[in-house]
Amino acid sequence: MLEISLYGNTLRQLAISFGIAALIFVLAMFAKSFAYAKLSKFASRTATGLDDSFAAAVKSTKWAIVLLLSMSLGSAFLELPPRASKIIWQISTLLTFAQIGLWLNHFAVYALILASKKGDKSEGERLESVAALKMLVIVILWVILTLLCLDNLGFNITTLVAGLGIGGIAIALAVQNVLGDFLASLSIVLDKPFVIGDFIILGNEMGTVESIGVKTTRLRSLSGEQLILSNKDLLESRLRNFKRMYERRVVFGFGITYETPLEKVEAVSAWVRDIVTSGEQIRFDRAHFKAFGASSLDFEVVYFVCAPDFGLYMDKQQEINLKLMKKFSENDVEFAYPTTLVHMAKPTPVSD
Image (cartoon, one colour):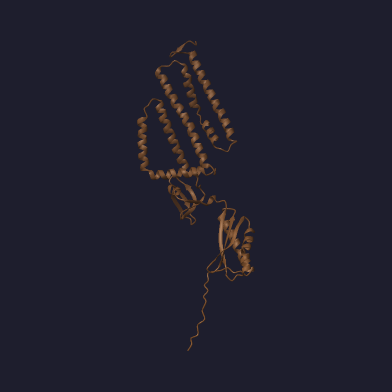
């Protein structure tokens, strides 16, 4: 019975071929499960996202592709016509590149998402440019794999590559402004000079970042209107990101009258130091008699508010100002304001 021939192959050869294919399939699926379990366990103990990307890539292995490749390898033990062997080899090549593409696709996209979420786990998925970058990565990856696959199948891809190169240059020249903004958005996503929710200042414009798009970034200004700025212009300008301020340095000054007695002038710096250090979330730096003004003795005070919140800074400054007014009032020290003192010369008597 086992010696019956089928297309030049005995049933024994067919059984051996089937057994080898089944063994390869079982071993491959076991290797996939084992590798994914080990990588997932290792990834759960580390802070880096690279091992998570490898785990996601391994998980993307398709059982149908593995099964077809196993059958293709098993068919190597059969006597097949040249045309059938060539077809099987071509199908195996396509399946191999398809699986490699799935691995690289999952690895690249997962790594990109992790990079965009770095420092803010909820931010990455809200950025429109992340989706655009994912699409760009996927397109480039599959174009390269398709060309390699065609080359391995025996096709001449030189003309096709040259055509794609010329076409790419023409398209790039036609959409260079849009492309510049797009690349700038990718730089914003990956480098993160600011993220959604940050308060930034760009020249005379300022506002809270609401969205980062493929071409523009939108801010909500303090007065309520929406500001729409080009991504390219943003990266070419000097930005001030107040959201990343850890503490706020405050410099303020005041003046007292020239009629203030010397001993009280000498005491003012100590009074200011005591007032500032008495407040919470404040770190005193210095207080000095700075200069002789046009109509006042000028003092300069520097302190730090140990939080970036603007409202807290204003509360502390108000508290300091009120305490200064009370202290000066108790010690009969007057704040100066712009005054002009005119000395009138006595008239010279005119002799007869």
